[in-house]
Length: 309
Ligand code: RIB
Image 1 (cartoon, rainbow, N blue to C red):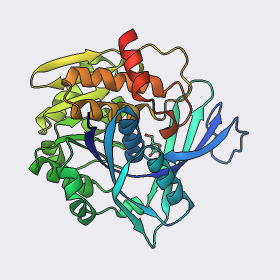
Image 2 (image 1 turned 90 degrees about the horizontal axis):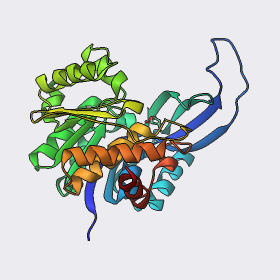
Image 3 (image 1 turned 180 degrees about the horizontal axis):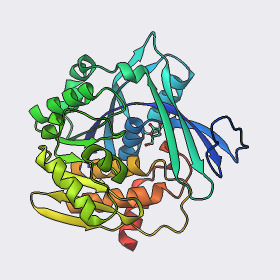
Image 4 (image 1 turned 45 degrees about the vertical axis):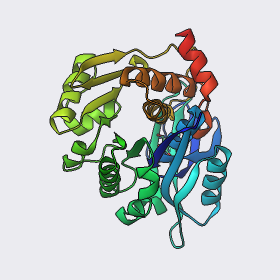
């Protein structure tokens, strides 16, 4: 069976992840309990999640001609990701992210500098139109300019490709972009920031989702951490619980795992509820390993977890 094609418009950065019991205060130095450098960036992580789950993943981005750019190419080659939509920028460096991971809870806090991918332009997207048009799903985020995401979603819509916007980080926009989205997939923090509704309960999530729908999105899919995800659209509202996890090691890649798994599942023709379950299983497996891209599970692991329930 041929692999389902998924185009991902987003960024690659090198993740520099520090484990410590807490964040330092301003002016303070604390000792770390572990450090790892590895491939990251929401777009690239989502591409790797989709590829490992079974997609023919096509990455559209910009990287620098430097050591972190080499890290990107090695990561994409290892998972057979199509990079015909990747531009090597002669003047800008590949970006990097500072990631704090709590040794107590596995929770994280991130500062991301998009580097060359901050210059990812509408023209770059148009140059990759063929890769988008021949995909079943386009997945994008907000780590590159919002206008670039908007053009990508517009190109996908014109070609009848399913569109998913993961609005992370929660960058405010004029709201028009949501009209181009089949699915908007914020986590609870991003949903609160983009709608003004504090998301603590399922009812709060439904209220926030209603605002994305009122702005023109066909469906809102709010991820809720250990509470799972809420899918809300014209055909109703569905809460999908999270899969139980024995020990959470690192939650940094969970959202990207969910989005990559969800996109692949839709591209394979699964129903939206089944695709949400597939995304939840992908996320549950990713939080049990350290790192972002390296924590993405393979298809066999996801199917085994879905069978166990
Ligand atoms: O979603 C996690 C990702 O966000 C990290 O890999 C980091 O690079 C930031 O982009």
